[in-house]
Image (cartoon, rainbow over all chains, first blue to last red; front, side):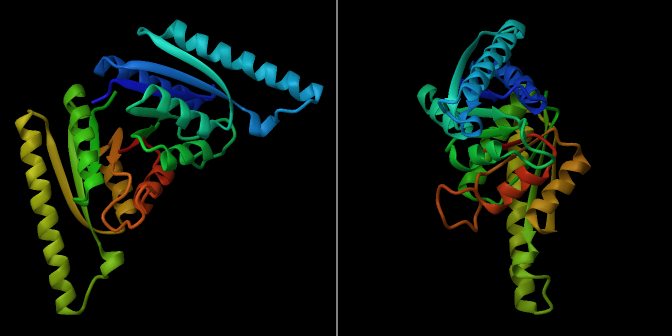
Length: 134
Length: 139
């Protein structure tokens, strides 16, 4: 049923829960697991401002950290990918590239409160693939 | 990771797809399967009119038959099965049933029977994802 699984993370707690689910499902179904971190450039902008550039490079650094932690702690092989852009668009685009048959992501990410996050909602809504919100 | 999987179905194609996902996952994990069919009384109303009552009775019979059929499939692979037929608003009934059975995963179709715009998520799926504090697989 599942050969290629994509888990998207922003390093938040719900995203960690999503990673637990994705790792478990991937090893249970013997599937390939890809982990994607998207630096949300809508929020911080792709500008010429020096501050913003520094913020983006910090966030990229953080993304690499988050991904290498996943890689290091996982008992199975994980392919990692770091992208910049709008999270839901990048998740959808990367899912297409690897032809993921399941996307797993946190119910809400860093920037939302109790409600479902806008990224989760958009991915469920627009990615024409099975999605688990964990 | 998954011990009890709740699969609400309205017999639509996406719901059937969800059933396949639910069974595949349940089989791998040896999880119990609980199926739910909801007669949408917010759509049809709890009737005083006898003709409307007939419609609801028929829907309930169809739903029960569908759940029985699913039950034999689950039995065949040696998993525990339970089912509920209820009246009400699907997303509310799904949330309540998930609480009752302690579902650690809800699997449901991206859109159901009453949906007209292909490619767009149905309101039941959206509300379940939004308001249920449990992992949800939309298929």
